[in-house]
Image (cartoon, rainbow, N blue to C red):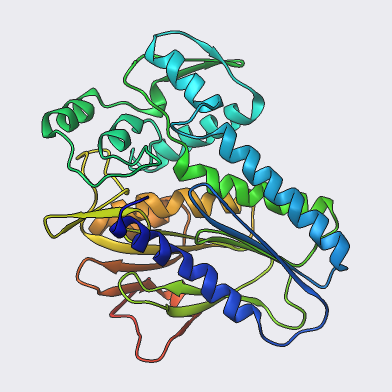
Length: 352
């Protein structure tokens, strides 16, 4: 983003990484090795603990190369495997895809069904209309008639027809944007690469999507949860081996227009940015594809408004922190037990 408001939103999204870095500076045995980059439109940071520095740096470099590959493969508006698939869909033609793309599409279809369509990466046209498909972002409101038409078209990842490695769509209105799942998939890939390199203790941070491996010596890894409206963390959270957290916030990518905030978190049912929620953070306990789940599931919980707890249950998520548009903080009982509040902060509501 190149406008002032966009830069501010992006800088705020970096604060979780900064909070994590500060928390990492405590005592411990063994070398702490950190490497950073900028991919997926955000800052990424990978930290290892306790491994010899040459081996650690080689492993972290391999992770960053993988992030760069994923960024190039699934970019939503620059030439990529994804844009080639979207071009074929727009022309009503089938396209051949590889195993990895099939994996992401299959996962996206499962989550779209699970979330009643609140998570659906087929709404690329809506995202484009709102101006979030651009490297030279300019705050503007889209044509209401175009938004209404995009909603009426009701594109869904469920419209895809997948046969072996051939993908087509019943609707040419489908435009895939995998930004809501790619960072979580990247977390899982990073964990696999680190394990392959013999790294057992690490923290992976992709713009607020974080996964922990092992420990930091005798300590657990700890991260800060960004307050959506003020600098600095509102709480800290210890992460155990294999756990991941995902955050969706209206402060990450947004613009202000005529005194109103418009974020990139679009409700597929209305075609509008959600206004009822400022931020949602979820914790995923260890399991298969925990990184992907942490990324995907925060979106429908964010968009579900008053139904957020029911949506979290549907996604199998017990640990949730939510900040609504009035700044009220709600947490689940399970999440409250894991948080350490920063001075002056507390939950307004605790739910089972």
